[in-house]
Image 1 (spheres, rainbow, N blue to C red):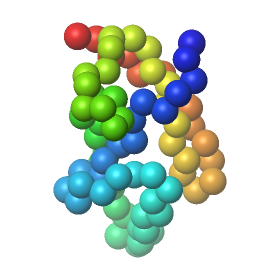
Image 2 (image 1 turned 180 degrees about the vertical axis):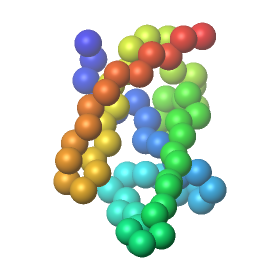
Image 3 (image 1 turned 90 degrees about the vertical axis):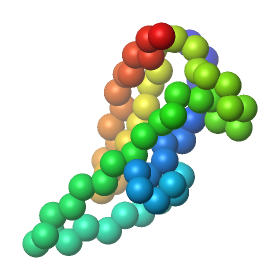
Length: 72
């Protein structure tokens, strides 16, 4: 297993990179944010290889780590 940063997701609708980004939400209204990965390796533009990738999300100080399978 290689431990290297492959990509950083992009916030849907804004094009802003989701890297140390703090998003606000009004609990009375509720909110949803969507981010995506275009499947390319960061800073190269090359398509990522098929395989198992690990991603992490930090929400309200809680870290969530999950696996993602990329198949071509």
